[in-house]
Length: 256
Image (tube, rainbow, N blue to C red; front, top):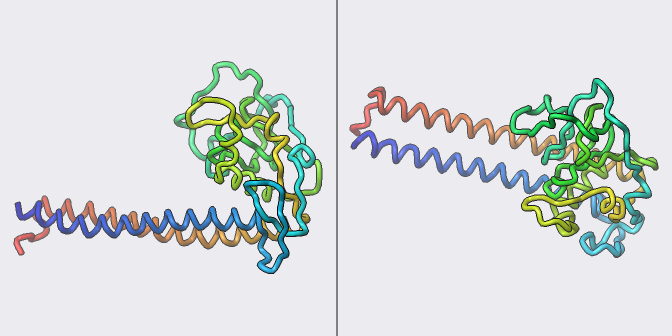
């Protein structure tokens, strides 16, 4: 009884500290989303003159920015997969990379690869069924994907990473979900026929570059803080397990 009482008290304290660390990590992730969303829709110049965009979910944008449909700055890549291509996956955190670089479990693999398409490093890749959750990004590798991916390459001089951030902001704002015509649960149907007519903002190229640099700098800071809190959380969990082990094996005197 003394051991149980002791452990209840000690683990409650540790669990409270772990909960605080996990909450801080959640807040940092929310801060990241907010920084990216504001930067790609309002810019990073606090003194910029604003104008109405004419796009309901966007609201005001800097006066020097334009609005353009996706099809005027992107072309869809429709190339057959090459013999040695490996599978590329678009993950919900925005990373688009060879599947083996992240994980290989939990995927359904086709027995026959009908319609697999080639992806070039640097292409903007949109997972048509998972775009609503942020599975959009710039491919880190050459490879192949199923036909459920929209693969795009720029027709104009643009910063591809800027538009990856913009599309993800569009997704996390709920706009992509609002375009869904299907009835699938936790899925949308964001195909090229739809995405090519979506209105995008069009800042000057130099501003696109500056915004991406700013976001990357902020991401580095946030990642560092998240790593610190994650490391502390792991240490607290190890400490919790150690206390329990020592208490139940008599290595700690809990008799007060």
